[in-house]
Length: 401
Image 1 (cartoon, rainbow, N blue to C red):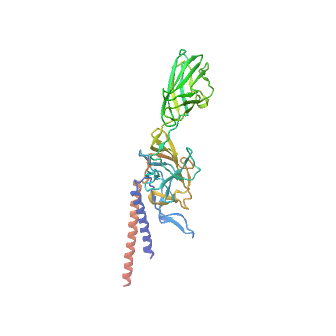
Image 2: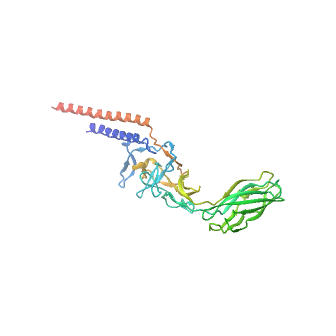
Image 3: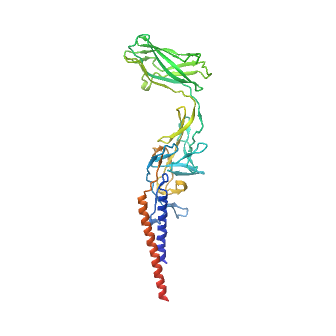
């Protein structure tokens, strides 16, 4: 009887609406949860494609992918997306997508979701991210020790006072590292030889090394205080016979910086060293990691060095509303959503990454309560229609008797 089937349909629809609203309210504090809505015209379900027989496939309710508020957490494993896109995760061999960046580290250093699904990204090869490689699980080198790097270049930004008397010595000190990561404080003495010429000598403390080559030389400046000789960086500086049995130090002194501009001048001003650079460092233990706005994951070590270990991949789809809702705040692509395109943050229409932050739910509690009242009234109206039709049916039966 249509008199009963029509309000029964209304009851089912209102019940679905109430369930949807209840689900929204219960997840209002769930990280990056996206609220869902229902539409009576399509029986509260969203068509996401069709089966091989041409029958429509429907699942869930329409999802609103508006941006949730982003809050700082001071937790390096928390990651928020500012803008479009999804994190790519691997769930038992199945690729899924999520905006929930409430990640954690496994005992082996794998970056995973709270449910243990692996966060996918691009690998590092030769110290650089290779975005042409297949996606791989992001792995953090927990407990790793970074090997030391011997100093191979050094540089000074300095001025040598042209008004100083001949014979004036201006010392500068710079810490160098050998192949074992042991530090050595080298002294570079500049001696005013007059006529715009300054001699230099490089030495380690007594007992640190037994010899070397190209440890002395001359810097020549023109009438404007600009370095003219040497006309290029000084290569072949060698310190041999290190006391800790490390390899010999072979160093290039970068006298020229950007745009081939000398880093040492000679003008009538106080002699001073304003900057020192060198590329060596001691060994270091893993101390943490960070994720940049472009998704680059960098491991941090106790020696102050950072090393890239991967780049978080982000995906986007043509129709977010067509994605299939999965467990754990995840989604899958469907015919209705279109295939996912995968890239990096800030490119191809996807947003940027914010480390130590989480995206909140976009559930608006006032809107949900208003919708709850409407759904409740619709349910009551359908219930009243059924009881009314039941009364009419009883009256009709009584008329027959």
